[in-house]
Length: 418
Image 1 (tube, rainbow, N blue to C red):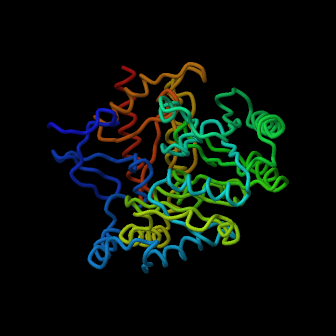
Image 2: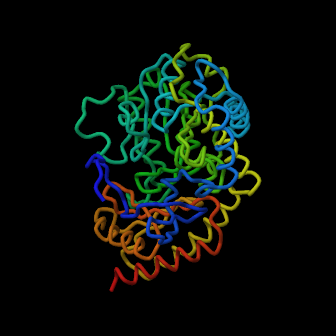
């Protein structure tokens, strides 16, 4: 099949999709695949959930594009209320964009406006997007940063508690990282110059590393002491993915800004940030907006997504099914020395393929995902070398589908090891 796509687009599979339903995708030849990629965490309610489809169809028959800096529309107004009700306490104001990158840029702009400070401290391994500002904040790998320097100034990188990579205990790693952050605030970015700390509470692209409560509390304490904003990038880990509605709930802290996208609208382009009305008011008038932001059809789909998440108890399902998948992955790990680590939370789990933290095995990881594809299981890789196989099923995944996926994985691993 000929096409005119840019050769710079690199696809993880050879599947050409015809249609999807729930946890399944079907290619143009009719072959079924268990989709444990969820469009990189986007199809939270599964493919083509009937309630999401119906909501989008109905809205498309009313108005598709009601440009939200020109007119308002009911789906946007209702979603802002519903989403504010789901935000951490005190974050009662919402601003919409199209993509995660745009929402990150919106949060960064607000932080600089509100504090009058320039610098943003990010954490090693974070992925925040591909646009210039978001890419400048990203350190999960060089692929989104290389070749178009200079990047944005005012970004300082602090260590994240990657205990497995450091080879230390979680306690040792956390102490080291907090001490290094204090050193950075004395040597690179004085608190009076620091607008925000921006963090993925559970890192995605770098390899599915969760933070921990002691580390997150340490960040919150430093932010409160110095008047620095704490921004949680929940683009991949949020919206029920980790078995809590927001991944930061695992760690008992309240941020000043939450960034959300991906699973927000079950596949329609939509993102948002949440902050207090008081903080939002400190931004410059007209600094938020965009041609396609808060698209009416996307907002209608997002309202239906929230209905499904709440009524079908998908956050609770993510916790239970995530524990089921974790236990089965840990059982598989015992049979293969090169499965070096299993980590993550809920339905966001990573399988590290390596001999050691300094000896990743990306080629083997690629063989594993290819073998899984042949078995009808779609998986993605991440990590700086592509050495981490990630498991990212939709939140609607059921017990039988987890068991089915693990059986397909086991057959694939046996073939790779043979």
